[in-house]
Amino acid sequence: MDLVEFENVSMRYGEEGPMAIENISLSVRENEFVAVVGPSGCGKSTLMKLVTGLAPPSDGYVYLGGKQVSGPQQGVGMAFQASNLLPWRTTLDNILLPMEIVQDYRHRFRAEKATFQEQGRALLARVGLAGCEDKFPWELSGGMQQRASICRALIHRPSLLMLDEPFGALDAFTREELWCMVRDLWQEEPFTVVLVTHDLREAVFLADTVYVMSKGPGRILVRKPVDLPRP
Ligand code: ADP
Ligand code: ADP
Image 1 (tube, rainbow, N blue to C red):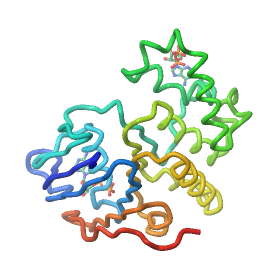
Image 2 (cartoon, protein in one colour):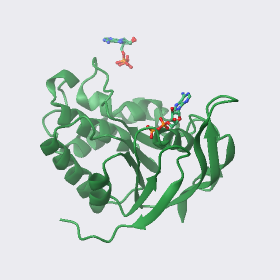
Image 3 (cartoon, helix red, strand yellow):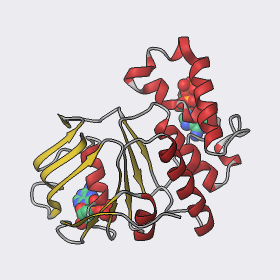
Image 4 (cartoon, rainbow, N blue to C red):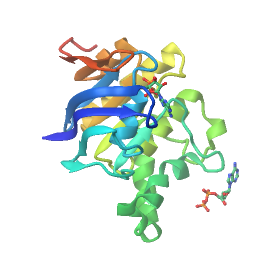
Protein backbone atom coordinates (compact mmCIF):
# COMPACT_ATOMS: atom_id res chain seq x y z
CA MET A 1 0.00 0.00 0.00
CA ASP A 2 1.14 3.55 -0.71
CA LEU A 3 1.51 5.59 2.44
CA VAL A 4 2.44 8.81 0.67
CA GLU A 5 1.24 9.89 -2.73
CA PHE A 6 1.92 13.04 -4.73
CA GLU A 7 -0.27 13.54 -7.76
CA ASN A 8 0.93 16.23 -10.18
CA VAL A 9 1.85 18.53 -7.35
CA SER A 10 3.07 22.07 -7.94
CA MET A 11 3.84 24.70 -5.39
CA ARG A 12 4.67 28.37 -5.56
CA TYR A 13 5.25 30.73 -2.69
CA GLY A 14 2.90 33.67 -3.10
CA GLU A 15 0.64 34.44 -6.04
CA GLU A 16 3.32 35.59 -8.44
CA GLY A 17 6.38 33.68 -7.27
CA PRO A 18 8.26 31.14 -9.36
CA MET A 19 7.40 27.45 -9.04
CA ALA A 20 9.28 25.90 -6.11
CA ILE A 21 8.29 22.47 -7.42
CA GLU A 22 6.37 21.66 -10.55
CA ASN A 23 4.20 18.72 -11.51
CA ILE A 24 5.68 16.19 -9.14
CA SER A 25 4.24 12.71 -8.83
CA LEU A 26 5.72 10.16 -6.49
CA SER A 27 4.66 7.50 -4.06
CA VAL A 28 6.10 5.90 -0.97
CA ARG A 29 5.01 2.41 0.06
CA GLU A 30 4.50 1.44 3.65
CA ASN A 31 7.83 0.51 5.27
CA GLU A 32 9.78 1.78 2.29
CA PHE A 33 12.94 3.84 2.82
CA VAL A 34 12.89 6.60 0.23
CA ALA A 35 15.54 9.24 -0.32
CA VAL A 36 15.01 12.45 -2.25
CA VAL A 37 18.28 13.82 -3.54
CA GLY A 38 18.98 17.10 -5.24
CA PRO A 39 20.94 20.31 -5.04
CA SER A 40 20.08 23.16 -2.73
CA GLY A 41 17.02 25.04 -3.99
CA CYS A 42 15.50 22.16 -5.97
CA GLY A 43 12.48 21.99 -3.68
CA LYS A 44 13.29 19.28 -1.13
CA SER A 45 12.11 21.28 1.86
CA THR A 46 9.00 22.30 -0.02
CA LEU A 47 8.24 18.62 -0.62
CA MET A 48 8.65 18.02 3.09
CA LYS A 49 6.32 20.90 4.02
CA LEU A 50 3.67 19.45 1.70
CA VAL A 51 3.83 15.93 3.18
CA THR A 52 3.69 17.24 6.73
CA GLY A 53 0.82 19.57 5.89
CA LEU A 54 2.72 22.70 6.86
CA ALA A 55 1.86 24.20 3.48
CA PRO A 56 -0.86 23.38 0.93
CA PRO A 57 0.06 22.64 -2.70
CA SER A 58 -0.80 25.30 -5.30
CA ASP A 59 -1.88 22.52 -7.62
CA GLY A 60 -2.36 18.75 -7.44
CA TYR A 61 -2.97 16.42 -4.52
CA VAL A 62 -0.95 15.12 -1.60
CA TYR A 63 -2.18 12.02 0.23
CA LEU A 64 -0.94 10.48 3.46
CA GLY A 65 -2.41 7.14 4.46
CA GLY A 66 -5.00 7.48 1.71
CA LYS A 67 -6.32 10.80 3.03
CA GLN A 68 -5.70 14.15 1.42
CA VAL A 69 -3.32 16.15 3.59
CA SER A 70 -4.88 19.27 5.03
CA GLY A 71 -3.14 20.93 7.91
CA PRO A 72 -0.27 19.76 10.14
CA GLN A 73 0.06 15.99 10.54
CA GLN A 74 0.71 14.88 14.12
CA GLY A 75 1.41 11.36 12.98
CA VAL A 76 4.59 12.36 11.17
CA GLY A 77 7.91 12.28 13.01
CA MET A 78 10.54 14.79 11.92
CA ALA A 79 14.24 15.31 12.41
CA PHE A 80 16.34 18.10 10.93
CA GLN A 81 19.93 19.19 10.46
CA ALA A 82 19.84 20.85 13.88
CA SER A 83 18.69 18.59 16.70
CA ASN A 84 16.39 21.28 18.15
CA LEU A 85 16.46 19.57 21.54
CA LEU A 86 15.01 21.78 24.27
CA PRO A 87 17.99 22.94 26.34
CA TRP A 88 16.13 22.92 29.66
CA ARG A 89 15.01 19.32 29.32
CA THR A 90 16.97 16.12 29.88
CA THR A 91 17.50 13.71 26.99
CA LEU A 92 14.72 11.43 28.20
CA ASP A 93 12.29 14.31 28.69
CA ASN A 94 13.21 15.65 25.26
CA ILE A 95 12.45 12.41 23.47
CA LEU A 96 9.16 12.00 25.37
CA LEU A 97 7.90 15.36 24.13
CA PRO A 98 5.69 13.85 21.39
CA MET A 99 3.92 11.75 24.04
CA GLU A 100 2.93 15.00 25.73
CA ILE A 101 1.66 16.80 22.67
CA VAL A 102 0.56 14.30 20.03
CA GLN A 103 -3.17 13.73 20.16
CA ASP A 104 -3.06 9.92 20.42
CA TYR A 105 -0.91 10.01 23.54
CA ARG A 106 -1.25 13.27 25.39
CA HIS A 107 -4.40 12.33 27.33
CA ARG A 108 -2.59 9.23 28.60
CA PHE A 109 0.66 10.96 29.47
CA ARG A 110 0.03 11.65 33.15
CA ALA A 111 -1.36 8.22 33.96
CA GLU A 112 1.12 6.23 31.87
CA LYS A 113 4.25 8.34 32.28
CA ALA A 114 6.25 5.48 33.82
CA THR A 115 5.46 3.20 30.86
CA PHE A 116 6.36 5.90 28.37
CA GLN A 117 9.62 6.53 30.23
CA GLU A 118 10.43 2.83 30.02
CA GLN A 119 9.82 2.91 26.25
CA GLY A 120 11.98 6.02 26.00
CA ARG A 121 14.85 4.38 27.89
CA ALA A 122 14.61 1.30 25.69
CA LEU A 123 14.74 3.39 22.52
CA LEU A 124 17.70 5.40 23.80
CA ALA A 125 19.50 2.14 24.57
CA ARG A 126 18.91 0.91 21.02
CA VAL A 127 20.64 3.97 19.57
CA GLY A 128 23.58 3.75 21.96
CA LEU A 129 22.44 6.42 24.42
CA ALA A 130 22.00 4.22 27.49
CA GLY A 131 23.21 6.27 30.45
CA CYS A 132 22.37 9.60 28.80
CA GLU A 133 18.75 9.72 29.94
CA ASP A 134 19.33 12.40 32.57
CA LYS A 135 21.92 14.39 30.66
CA PHE A 136 21.07 17.77 29.17
CA PRO A 137 21.62 18.49 25.46
CA TRP A 138 24.78 20.53 26.13
CA GLU A 139 26.31 17.45 27.74
CA LEU A 140 25.91 15.44 24.52
CA SER A 141 28.10 15.51 21.42
CA GLY A 142 26.60 16.58 18.09
CA GLY A 143 26.20 12.97 17.00
CA MET A 144 24.53 12.02 20.29
CA GLN A 145 22.16 14.98 19.94
CA GLN A 146 21.14 13.77 16.50
CA ARG A 147 20.60 10.24 17.85
CA ALA A 148 18.29 11.73 20.48
CA SER A 149 16.53 13.87 17.90
CA ILE A 150 15.79 10.78 15.79
CA CYS A 151 14.50 8.98 18.91
CA ARG A 152 12.16 11.91 19.55
CA ALA A 153 10.88 11.62 15.98
CA LEU A 154 10.21 7.88 16.41
CA ILE A 155 8.96 7.53 19.98
CA HIS A 156 5.27 7.90 19.13
CA ARG A 157 5.53 5.36 16.31
CA PRO A 158 4.62 7.83 13.56
CA SER A 159 3.22 6.47 10.33
CA LEU A 160 5.98 8.38 8.54
CA LEU A 161 9.47 9.49 9.55
CA MET A 162 10.71 12.56 7.68
CA LEU A 163 14.44 13.21 7.85
CA ASP A 164 15.66 16.53 6.48
CA GLU A 165 19.47 16.48 6.21
CA PRO A 166 19.78 15.01 9.71
CA PHE A 167 23.44 14.10 9.20
CA GLY A 168 24.40 17.31 7.40
CA ALA A 169 26.16 19.00 10.30
CA LEU A 170 28.16 15.97 11.44
CA ASP A 171 31.78 15.11 10.70
CA ALA A 172 32.33 12.28 8.21
CA PHE A 173 33.03 9.59 10.84
CA THR A 174 30.05 10.43 13.01
CA ARG A 175 27.86 10.69 9.94
CA GLU A 176 28.64 7.13 8.89
CA GLU A 177 28.05 5.87 12.43
CA LEU A 178 24.61 7.45 12.32
CA TRP A 179 23.86 6.04 8.88
CA CYS A 180 24.49 2.59 10.33
CA MET A 181 22.38 3.36 13.38
CA VAL A 182 19.41 4.45 11.28
CA ARG A 183 19.79 1.50 8.94
CA ASP A 184 19.97 -0.95 11.87
CA LEU A 185 16.88 0.56 13.49
CA TRP A 186 14.98 0.29 10.23
CA GLN A 187 16.13 -3.26 9.52
CA GLU A 188 15.18 -4.47 12.99
CA GLU A 189 11.66 -3.13 12.68
CA PRO A 190 10.81 -1.35 9.42
CA PHE A 191 8.98 1.95 9.31
CA THR A 192 8.32 4.35 6.46
CA VAL A 193 11.04 6.93 5.89
CA VAL A 194 11.52 9.85 3.55
CA LEU A 195 15.07 11.17 3.76
CA VAL A 196 15.85 14.48 2.13
CA THR A 197 19.53 15.00 1.38
CA HIS A 198 21.98 16.45 -1.11
CA ASP A 199 24.36 13.55 -0.49
CA LEU A 200 23.91 10.89 -3.17
CA ARG A 201 26.19 8.45 -1.36
CA GLU A 202 24.05 8.74 1.75
CA ALA A 203 20.88 8.20 -0.28
CA VAL A 204 22.24 5.08 -1.95
CA PHE A 205 23.60 3.69 1.30
CA LEU A 206 20.32 4.06 3.16
CA ALA A 207 17.38 4.00 0.80
CA ASP A 208 15.42 1.40 -1.14
CA THR A 209 14.35 3.99 -3.66
CA VAL A 210 16.04 7.21 -4.64
CA TYR A 211 14.27 10.13 -6.28
CA VAL A 212 16.49 12.70 -7.91
CA MET A 213 15.20 16.25 -8.19
CA SER A 214 16.69 18.79 -10.55
CA LYS A 215 17.21 22.43 -9.85
CA GLY A 216 14.87 25.02 -11.32
CA PRO A 217 11.41 23.58 -11.78
CA GLY A 218 12.44 20.71 -9.51
CA ARG A 219 11.06 17.88 -11.57
CA ILE A 220 11.80 14.34 -10.57
CA LEU A 221 14.20 12.83 -13.05
CA VAL A 222 14.66 9.28 -11.96
CA ARG A 223 12.94 6.81 -9.73
CA LYS A 224 15.69 4.37 -9.25
CA PRO A 225 15.36 1.31 -7.06
CA VAL A 226 18.63 0.80 -5.31
CA ASP A 227 19.92 -2.72 -5.76
CA LEU A 228 23.54 -2.21 -4.83
CA PRO A 229 24.86 -4.53 -2.15
CA ARG A 230 24.98 -2.76 1.18
CA PRO A 231 28.01 -3.12 3.37
P1 ADP B 1 15.71 22.85 -1.05
O1 ADP B 1 15.14 22.39 0.26
O2 ADP B 1 15.92 21.73 -2.02
O3 ADP B 1 16.93 23.67 -0.87
P2 ADP B 1 13.40 24.60 -1.13
O4 ADP B 1 12.19 23.76 -1.11
O5 ADP B 1 13.80 25.27 0.14
O6 ADP B 1 14.62 23.78 -1.75
O7 ADP B 1 13.20 25.74 -2.22
C1 ADP B 1 12.73 25.51 -3.54
C2 ADP B 1 12.53 26.85 -4.24
O8 ADP B 1 11.50 27.58 -3.59
C3 ADP B 1 13.76 27.74 -4.21
O9 ADP B 1 13.83 28.39 -5.46
C4 ADP B 1 13.48 28.71 -3.11
O10 ADP B 1 14.08 29.95 -3.38
C5 ADP B 1 11.97 28.83 -3.13
N1 ADP B 1 11.44 29.06 -1.78
C6 ADP B 1 11.60 28.25 -0.72
N2 ADP B 1 10.98 28.75 0.37
C7 ADP B 1 10.43 29.92 -0.02
C8 ADP B 1 9.66 30.94 0.65
N3 ADP B 1 9.31 30.81 1.94
N4 ADP B 1 9.27 32.01 -0.09
C9 ADP B 1 9.60 32.13 -1.39
N5 ADP B 1 10.31 31.22 -2.06
C10 ADP B 1 10.73 30.13 -1.40
P1 ADP C 1 7.19 21.52 31.24
O1 ADP C 1 8.34 20.63 31.58
O2 ADP C 1 6.65 22.31 32.41
O3 ADP C 1 6.13 20.84 30.44
P2 ADP C 1 9.06 22.86 29.48
O4 ADP C 1 10.12 21.97 30.01
O5 ADP C 1 8.78 22.85 28.03
O6 ADP C 1 7.69 22.68 30.27
O7 ADP C 1 9.42 24.35 29.87
C1 ADP C 1 9.50 24.78 31.20
C2 ADP C 1 9.41 26.28 31.24
O8 ADP C 1 10.67 26.86 30.87
C3 ADP C 1 8.40 26.81 30.28
O9 ADP C 1 7.59 27.74 30.95
C4 ADP C 1 9.21 27.49 29.22
O10 ADP C 1 8.52 28.58 28.72
C5 ADP C 1 10.45 27.92 29.97
N1 ADP C 1 11.59 28.13 29.07
C6 ADP C 1 11.52 28.54 27.80
N2 ADP C 1 12.71 28.65 27.25
C7 ADP C 1 13.60 28.27 28.17
C8 ADP C 1 15.04 28.17 28.20
N3 ADP C 1 15.80 28.44 27.15
N4 ADP C 1 15.59 27.75 29.33
C9 ADP C 1 14.83 27.45 30.40
N5 ADP C 1 13.50 27.56 30.43
C10 ADP C 1 12.88 27.96 29.33
